Length: 339
Image 1: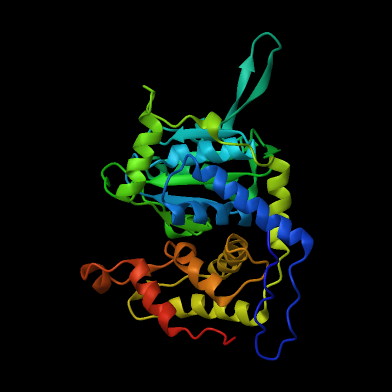
Image 2: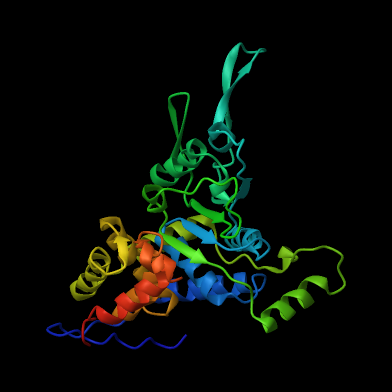
């Protein structure tokens, strides 16, 4: 890999140092992971990058899209490439919190209770159609996401890192669903929108899956294992240690603050939005092949980091505008630091 150029200096700053060897290795590892997952998850490059941003930043993801777009395949491919455990939970109206977290079972042989661990005791958890479960079950999962541990019968059981939840919801079917309230949506680092693939990508996917096979899914044995769970934890620590220039932090905070008074936004993002934006921008910089954060990284990841943290005013909803439309207009007006 060629040496990376030094970052441009911001006003009043000394010239920034070149990337340290450890950060160069981090960038190379992320690129290998992106290539490995891309062998099975064909197309949707923006979606894959946003998933990797959340993984590197140690955050959780809410994915919105119609069924059949490869969400389960993406989680399975990540688990294969990272040598991680994965589990899938189909959320339904009759799903109980104990079905997710686990429960105590009485053993008549020993005349004692044993803990039966639920599917959350994994590394990658796909919570499919999370908005179909009642609020009590949703809260059980969101508590695990926030605390990194499960409480069963008064005992706390920590989860083994890394732990990443990918929760999905279908934007088309609303009957029989329980929309996540704003306070719970705020727990997700990013909200990722997944759409139908491009025509050429869909042709490649069909060719890869149907060539000489009767199965309806990709053969994941072709996906190479590029790192372990311990490597992922070290990568997350390295990303968290990347220094962000105070002017870039100021830019991120001003973007979030602008959502609270922007015309057409009824509810703006809170301080957790500022934290999420800076965390995600660090990972976005690594995906871009840099070990320093620029205003472009903040701008690039702002929509996935903030679209679920704001609520549009009724007049914009009537006009058919989306949260992304409002954020795009806002980003065009908030002045970025000059290089």
